[in-house]
Length: 317
Figure 1: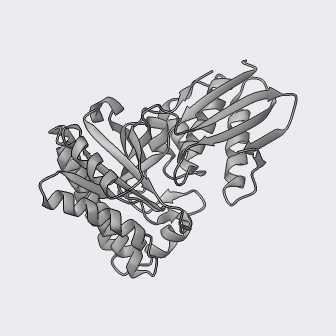
Figure 2 (figure 1 turned 180 degrees about the vertical axis):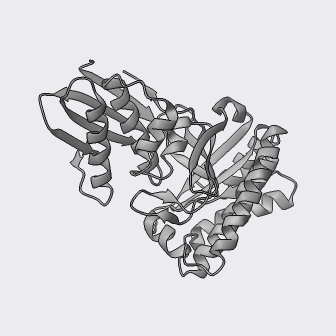
């Protein structure tokens, strides 16, 4: 058995959004969804987690603090479950650090934790099993485990299957700008819980299945513009639902960036926007339009960070 190991995983961005839970305790989603993993061009936007064997017990720190927030119980349950799988019974000390993550990090955090314990304890678990273990910590951990573009499907019996649709290299022609704002955000759980009470939520479940079929056709045809268009449509749909439930995620400052994107498109530049649950607007375009988009953002004094689609979790030491 190893003495220490370090793993990295990258946060995600929804393509087909996840809203609501069918089982909150297990963090089972209310419907299928699809996501990208993201990092910056230097791959420094990530969660990095180090695990070290100890004589006994469990210690877990996130960004130098002992975890006490709402997901702490799930984190410790995950650690105990994986320690129980090891050939030799032992303890573990874990330090997890987020680097440059703009909004939420539960997905990359759950992925890095599961990955590092699998490596440290030499469990050699398949990806689907690691996703199952990570899911109670974060319902979207799959996107950080698999990387690239991945889908989370729920069948009519409630069974979950997760697949990578495209590797990160498929998106080499797509340019992503992240425009963050220092604005207080709604908690992810609040968004999930309230939007699931929307009068049209059941219709939304059916809509998602149709859009996932459309997304598969789009990527099979290597149509990145179609993919970006679908991401924007999804974002518009979900944020309308949030707004109708009294949760205005997109604040006026963020709306200004969206308006700039719409103006670019009206002038013939293929640029699209996406907003997840946090206070950040993502602008996407193709490489051939990047100079125009960059110039427009700079002229409008819009500060951004360049991102790209990331690979899955990995061992780094």
